Image (cartoon, rainbow, N blue to C red; front, side, top):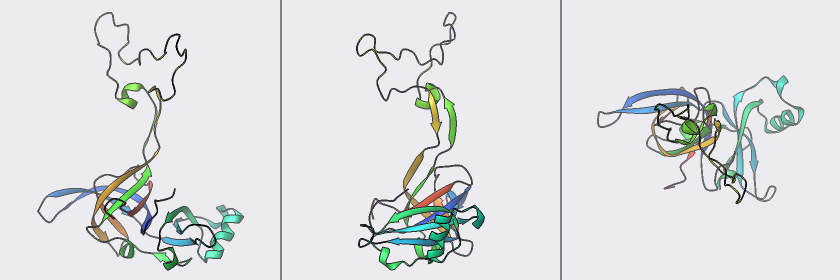
Length: 218
């Protein structure tokens, strides 16, 4: 995945779960905790060599024997141990980074700042039209012949004699990339490398997410 162009800071992390904290007005605020430790720069892209400015970030440890030889050489060139997850982030400040540089939460985000969080949503499996698209069910009365959750007519008769593309029908639901924008950073735990973001973010517990500077209002 690649973030939008601009002067952005970003970190890869693991969703730990949700809890709640007090705000300055004495109200409970739901927050999501994200572990953003072990982030390191694995490559720096420049306009001279690649045609654009970006940095590649690695996160998570992996057994070196499970890495392919091309990737092993890539990590060795950067002078870092192999990482399980990689992401490329476009930023105008790419020249300020060096391969092998460690990225900490204190350098990236501050309490009260606004961030965008990208992750993979929970997979729901094969779902019908009511669960997937919010269709209304048929009346549950005598003589309905178990039609309550059926999608109804989907064809277009003689013209055009086919189902049009994009028809909302049953199918696999979830497990797609989603971004929640403009979330407030409630607190930054520098010692434990944990970020507390207001509200919910995509994905299950243990899912990998990308936290970057918010695009709106930047």
